[in-house]
Length: 404
Ligand SMILES: [Zn+2]
Image (cartoon, rainbow, N blue to C red; front, side, top):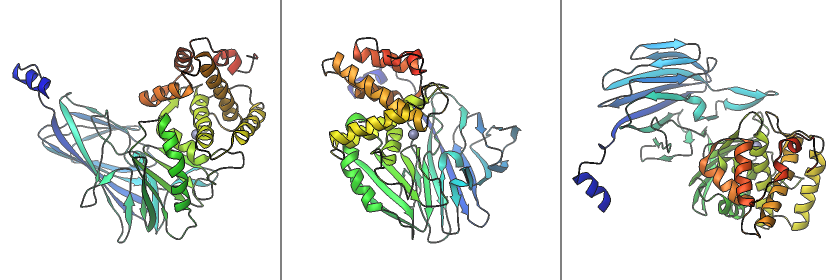
């Protein structure tokens, strides 16, 4: 406080940021299978140019109060004056593969991602111009809507998007005739929500999180303060899908699988780290999610040491089918081998640092920095903690061409 007063009195402090408001509105139309979206801007000054990166199959009938330039999947919007509006229809139903939906609207509920509803937008504006943003979901009568954001008294979501000047909603949305259970777990406001009438284990899931989430948060202290878990049965995607401060999980997935890993914890690690791999580093992202799902169960007493080691042995056996980890997409045996490699890396760091460091210190840094991860970066961070070279992270070994 004293410092800022001093700076202000000497006139060094930059001008206070100027704000404009972004009001996102989505009206859900179950009959048409769409959401009618409007993006309203208002302020003394607006960004001079916005570029929306749309999906031509899902963002239809785009119109604006100011002239728009549409070029393939790019829409350029140049707001004029103090107010400007853009609107379009968003097709909600979307199949991921094998007839399974990762986005769906029925006459009773809707589940989709707000970062698909509102496409990525880049803005051209002076640095001092900042946005404030809200999202309003208009749904049929008696429908309720949830997102990983706080609602104000009139039911409008107050968005935040740290580090972004043009704020956009992110994460899962569930709306409709839904049932929810909420609890504060280790400082995180957790909501489990699913369409009514489906066989959903909301309480079991909340109880499972109440003993696993605190353990996970020791590794990832910056874990979101709000978490929305959306669940539904068929015909939705038969697995887990993580999003910003939220995830989707199919209702049939067990909390702990036969091989002693947990899809729910796996997705929670994705929520915690927020990292993605480059073209050959998805194994790091998936391996960390799988390894920390297993570690969290062990550390929280969910599985014994013996069953933990059995699980790693099973993964090693499965992973032997997949010698090369440096592939674009990590799944099945690639992730199994990745998990075992990370366990070896963890053991080596602990041993060479006399127990002072572990893989926890590496993933903690990754979760703080977020964004793209490469093998080079991961190796650099891991070897810094280990203080010695890690042969397990040599390219030839990861490609399966050499034993460590
Ligand atoms: Zn994953």
